[in-house]
Image (cartoon, rainbow, N blue to C red; front, side):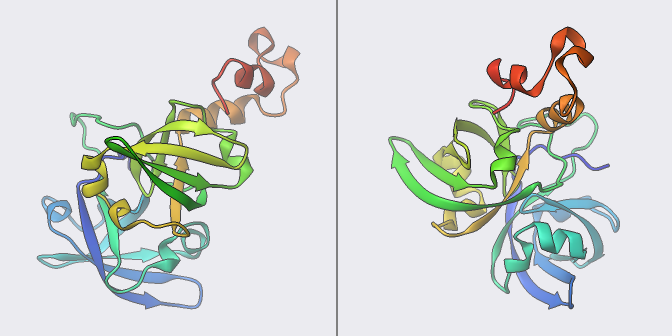
Length: 219
């Protein structure tokens, strides 16, 4: 299983999209992420873990299976579209963001982009089922970018992005109405899965989803 950190290494560009009835193949122009990369390695594209199937000096190809097309914003990609790129974490690398699997939970929609002092606040609408795994000041991956949640509502959340992150990621071109890939923090997902549906008496010390939410561990 590949693991990423949510620290984008470069913004690549889609140079070809080969669409099939339910799947697709992407050809992406890149530089840094190709260094040391071999066929079969994993690269996160807008936060989606893809396998390198072909390479040249400045491009790589990756297949996108039907399930990924259905669950992510990769189906919206066109020739010339910028995409966030990150190689899988290597043993001994610094973990600058948080553990990201490249397994997108759903697609959100940017509702607003608001400058605030030296930052820009993005408000993103999501399926209410996703906010169960979010807490204020917790971690979230948006198009593969490791970000800190500011506010969490029933069907939306906000993140505050510093200029460095904005200028070095695809979100610099983001605008209201754009779809973005969302991956919730894996720890929150596993914890919620473990206690979901269990009666309070069946979990240690009466642990339940309601108690986790009251304690601030889940949204």
